[in-house]
Length: 461
Image 1 (spheres, one colour):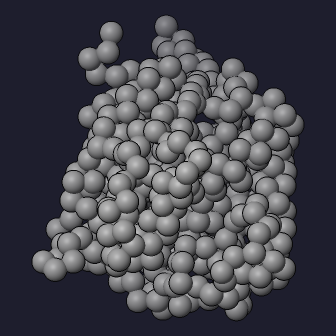
Image 2 (cartoon, helix red, strand yellow):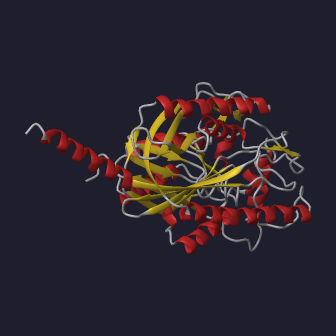
């Protein structure tokens, strides 16, 4: 009898190890997307010339995951400001056609760096760009689209390695609420130390199976505008998110580090002094915390199966402003107000199209067994949506990302709309301010997707 006990234990251990080995497989891919000739940069309207030099290369990266039921999905991250639907939709369609994936199986996130190239498919001359320069922007964008498609195909076609997934969470301290309240100007873009932010750093570890498994890749996140560097900075770089990835990859040679951005629509780095060394410092701080979590954190297993869900939600827009209000807006501070006023004025012209009543925004949920729910929000999402979604589907085993799939403008909460400020501006591809009830529409859309994907929601039968 004594001899059978260790045999049974060994048998159980072997079966457990075999199950873990077969739980996940992963394939990785990476491509440099640094512009090869001068193009205009994204993020600051005041820039009036192409970039001057390359401070650091920028990349797009992909990890393809396959669960034990051979369900596949691909996560793509990029050192870019974000993809409009006009640019991203053709990417999704081609990946689906080439790989057989469903739309829900593809998640595209951008770091929201303001020191990367501007993306456009419009070759028209603008106030600041000549027709020739606009053609260069379009050429870069089309080339980028094809690179992203091939990146996803490469990750999916790579010889998949058996892996284990585990997760932890850290904290980064440079994230600062930027909605500063003033007596004369209302809410301005500044520094608000008492304002709400999300300083968490979710970390997903991808390693070969076993207690001493080899680290292959890591996905990590911070909820902060990637804007250490301002509009007068004309060098290409991934800003702090790029430097954080580089830091982690140097600490663990041969791995692939991938950055996602959370609900940081109303957060900036602190300090934010337009110095490259400060950007590198923020990146090192974030990279060190990711490294600490990987080496010292108590990581929890992330098991399968993987279920994904995707849909568009109709986010309600406020009615067209009357002419008097538009004229007042034109006189206000900030170039964005003049732009919005001019665009709205066009709808008052005879024969103009009806003013849009809503914007169809894409949302995703990836459910990893019972261990993790990854929510992919679109737009520049303010921090309130962390609590809104936690209240809707529960706070446990939750990872909320923003700037996914379609960055159409700001996604404000009812509180932010009530208080005013830059983040209320809504759409910047097109025009329109969101209604306060938008937050409820988003919450219900995520709840529906989470249920569809298989998340167990408190109070849900």
